[in-house]
Amino acid sequence: MAVEGINEVLKALAEAVPTGDEVQSVLKVQADFLIAKIKEKVPVDSGNLKDSIQFFKPKKKNYLVVGPKYRKGSKGFKRKGAKSGGNHANLVEYGFTHKSGKVIPPRPFMRPAFDQNKEAILNMMESKLGDLVVKKFA
Image (cartoon, rainbow, N blue to C red; front, side):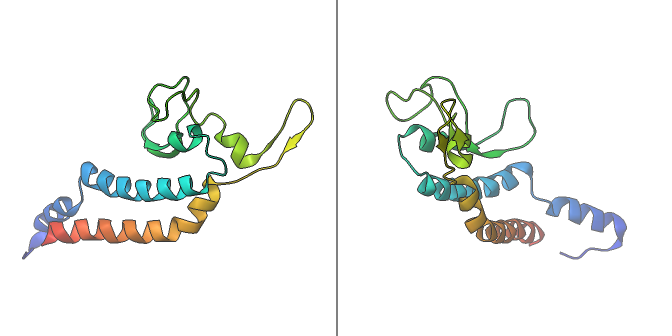
């Protein structure tokens, strides 16, 4: 594509920017990858915690989250009889002291999964987003 003059440069740059849907599709692929890695590290599989790890947009927010989606009841969960969502994810991740005084140690799974995979995720995102821009210029 031949570009001459500032107006053409600005127009070409505007057209080279991926749309929100294109960016979100790249993020969704990376989120799915991270979700799989987090679920591998969940220390105990009662089903509820693993099923609650999702890619979602919180109500009334302008960002996306990978993590436990806190819910009441079993609505929306795959496992029959699930009583709650990932409402206890923070207790598993960070540990807690029970009201009886018993200390429950942390069993981190979210942070280690992220830390072990962040470089790969960032590299894949950079590559895929770069491919989108190059495709727009082609």
